[in-house]
Length: 131
Image 1 (cartoon, rainbow, N blue to C red):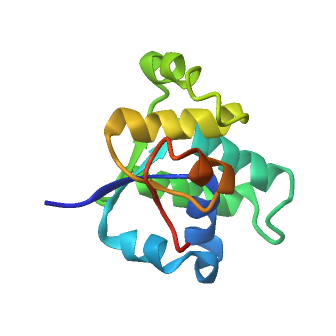
Image 2 (image 1 turned 60 degrees about the horizontal axis):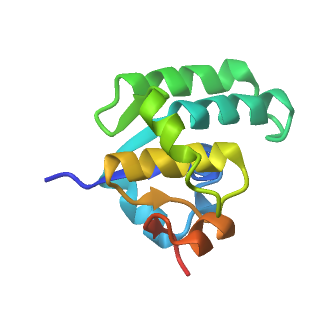
């Protein structure tokens, strides 16, 4: 059986543009099926649009995201109403985007690939990263 994980935004961006920044636990997840929540796609686009990845333009990012749609390892997921509704209970996480990402991992019953200290300290979901 293939392991399944949900990815946080920074983990997805780093996997594409700075793989050396990934923790070994996140790197080891490379053979897993990775669910990419719609909000992660939106945040990734926003990061590029705001110039927070020097040298990376939408013209470079969008084909990579599109390639994920046909990949065996990635599944781009829709933002489901039940996930949005469940996210309100995750008040230990102040950021709405992080809540939605965590809610997606909880909904799928999978670990979350994330270094985010707020998410990790909340203990609402199992995270994959080095300690």
